[in-house]
Amino acid sequence: MDRINGRSIALGFAGSLVVFGVLYWLAGVDPSATIDAVHAADPLVLGLVFLCGVVWLTSWGLALRTVLGELGASISVAQSTAIFSGVLFANNVTPFGQAGGEPISGLLISRITDQRYERGLAAIASVDALNFIPSIGLALCGLLILGVDAPNTTQLPVVAGTFLALAVLVPLCGAISWQYRHHLQRGVVATLGPIVRLLSRIRNQTITTGAIERRIGGFFSAIERIGTRPKTLLVALLLSSVGWIAQVGALWLSLLSLGHTVSPMVVLIAIPIGAIAGVTPLPGGLGAIDLVLVGVLLTLVSIARPTILAAVLIHRFVIYVIPTVVGGGVAAVVASENLRNTTEN
Image (tube, rainbow, N blue to C red; front, side, top):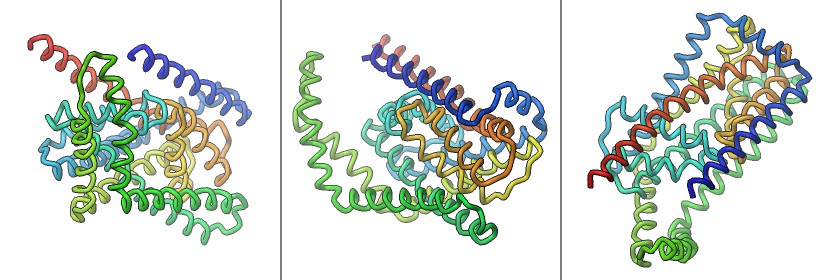
């Protein structure tokens, strides 16, 4: 299984390199021009970009802390930030982004907080779902204001139409899933039960149908508990919004560091649309998110392509590379402690 996962991750990163190659080919830019633009960035403004990244990571870590608190897990601010770094590491090295990283994230959370695995999985699934809501509101505000201020932007209707379709479809699916969550739970048990039992027999383990039902039931119970606590949801949504605004600020400052001031509404539109590309079968959306961000910016502003590519690379270094490195360290520490405990026992 480890070899299969490693192969999937390697293929994912190889795919990301291909996407980067396509990105430069479509943009018609010599990579050296982008590198020269990065070297010309203002160091002071780059420091502010990094600060925005810290605010984003801390805010979303606090959102996870809020949700975990509702499930009975008490952790500090530092712990919540470290845990969320580990979550981002899992998301950023597995295919399909959050969808691929959530099982690992649930395990990481359960190890650090001493919660059952299904509760850790429910916590991160809830935070990921809540994070989508503010992104819709922010992007719609950006589209509305930019449409009023710059009604002659020719490609704005295309961008708006694409996002509005996704903005309607995803919440609709979420609402239907919540309304019929008990039917969904039974369907998950019926689907996963035989698979889990087969895998357990292959590994010479015995897992009863009742145990499977209890684990899946625990996951849905945790989701329902979070979903019926308005105060918890409100606090988590506010923290999520702060994180999104920090991401927007990071990209806006990345452009500013290269000597360009753009309307914040442009970046407010670009960040949520780029985040949607994270569902592609590439590690953390690497390459796909970059491609979308560059495409949206090229559509809405008149800035040289090497400069836009450089700004996106600066932004993604802070939002993708740094959390992945830090989160990898957190995951390594948790894994080593778990191995030591297993050896001692």
